[in-house]
Length: 359
Image (cartoon, rainbow, N blue to C red; front, side):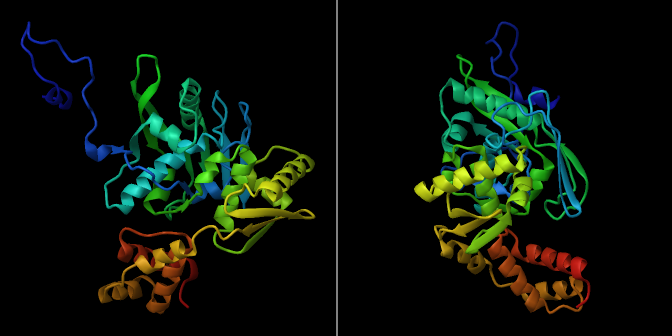
């Protein structure tokens, strides 16, 4: 008997009619259900650092390529256009739910089931028909946008060609056509980043930022400034990292307008923004709790003695206690609280040795 037949009740002729619902074809091991209330918003660091999403509010059919040193990222649109920075809300919601589950010791998968209404509320979107239509359009663009890159996630350095999400399925709809439940299968590239906790917490006011450029600027400040008091970047470089298609003159005007509004309203979360000639300066408002950074480092348990023996094998010649301090500092800086600290530390040692060799 096949798997579907096992799940469906058997009726003799003339017995009750077959259920109008399809059988549940997914075991719990293949599916993660998003049901964690108030999960902290989180974004993956790879797409925060690189211009994956379009800033356009109209269909964007440009094919874009971004390079930084030896790394590159090429984004190709579908017939619906490139995925936009507002479409990113879907990823943020999925990443937030998965990370919250991992922190609770739950099993997760890259296929997640979510309630459309919960996503719309969590990301500060309208919950009327327009909101549901916008969500469906976002899923189409996320699935259709193709990326080619050698930007590593989860320590894997390889050339990847993929869609931002592998698949989206509307599981249930109301009679008036509104979505109730959705299944989203994340790309391996995104899921690798989640599994290796290459994510950063975002301020909830991120979803209140009106302009796509404001959202992108905040992402970059959160990634590159972090808990530092200040981060400075040239206007040209900022434009490249934003993925803006404007002329430099127009981009300067747009940034100056945001600076002026921030000086009046302090609306950019966590960071104030200023301009000095053709440099943009971000300064921490110190609104991110400093002890939230320290909790991560303090929560890392003491390692067992046998772990140090393995570390000496993985990073020959290095002082493993020194590497432990570097590992703890790095976890704190990147806001990583690994589920398996010993394995995470050993992987850090191997990576350290691969990059630096013997001391």
